[in-house]
Image 1 (cartoon, rainbow, N blue to C red):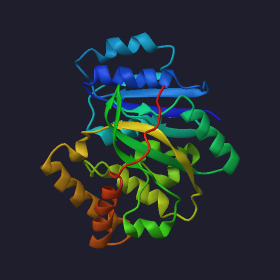
Image 2 (tube, rainbow, N blue to C red):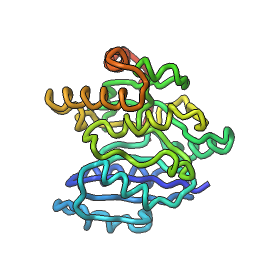
Image 3 (cartoon, helix red, strand yellow):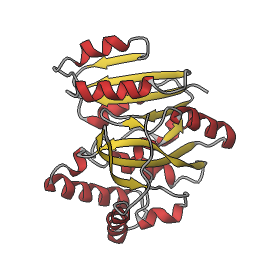
Length: 254
């Protein structure tokens, strides 16, 4: 099975290069790697040229935000399976993509997800929060459950039914998109119980109090739009993050 991996970035040259190196270290060759850049002015285009052997397509042009960029990547994807690895995120080990493809082949899943760790630093590895997804149940959506989007892979053949990211959301389009997928009884969902991605702290949704409030409002909008609950779902969703801060096992890296 061919896998398409999409990375979106804007003025993140140094961290993007580390993400590219993480992709390069994967023990998996049947890969289409697409990078969508928002028209960076920090030398990103020049840096990317060093990895032309790895990158299938690089687009650098202004966009209307991260979800518009992600939609561009989805429209370019040609692989059987599609996933995202954002700039400044890294794979947790060199066999992530191989493990993902093997799980798809074994289970004939339509969508697969795993676990994620938020890190304060990559070298040395300093894990701040451990997001253990657990097994999927549609009932849990009303309890605010959601797998970490950077660990999600899905069959491209399902894209027409799933649709693209709703760009009316500025922070929570990934949550809305996943709710749309996971409420569908026609989607076969599988859990890969291992850490797939290290994600740097300080993303758009939590970098300021204003964004945290906006994130909650957009999450609630997505919950209502997809008929998966109400204000209690939002409360459960936020409370569940507390458990992710408890002591946990630190996973190795390269």
